[in-house]
Image 1 (cartoon, helix red, strand yellow):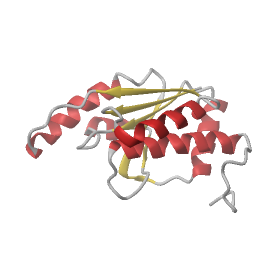
Image 2 (cartoon, rainbow, N blue to C red):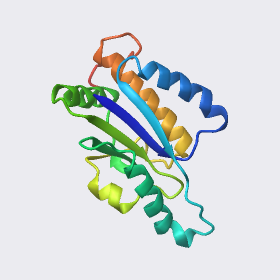
Image 3 (cartoon, one colour):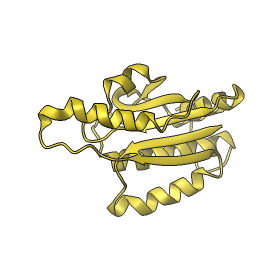
Image 4 (cartoon, rainbow, N blue to C red):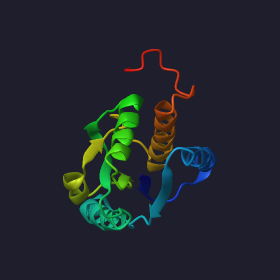
Length: 161
């Protein structure tokens, strides 16, 4: 089973090194790759819909046929680390091609992506910069792998919390 993380924009600055570390660790558990798509230039807020539409088209080209799409959206559902691990395990049991986790740019994800996604997942009710969202999501995917294998990285006292 494959996990793809597709995001608008490149990772810059202080997030690059920790992201690379978690992406490397994550590959121990899943077939994982990350894809970045170009940000659409926006000179004013009035073009937000067009920006989301164009970035959304680019993101969708990174989703392989048959993959479930998990759109990262602050209005989505919050999952625990254990729930994420169970979700990924279930995909493996069903022999699913995998899941594509999509992170939008400055204006979020297009309506097309939000309406067609298999799941809307929230990392926080806060609006997060895409670099931080990508780092948090990648760490959580890594954590899901350690939970599935019963490794000591995840130290929750109650396994259902």
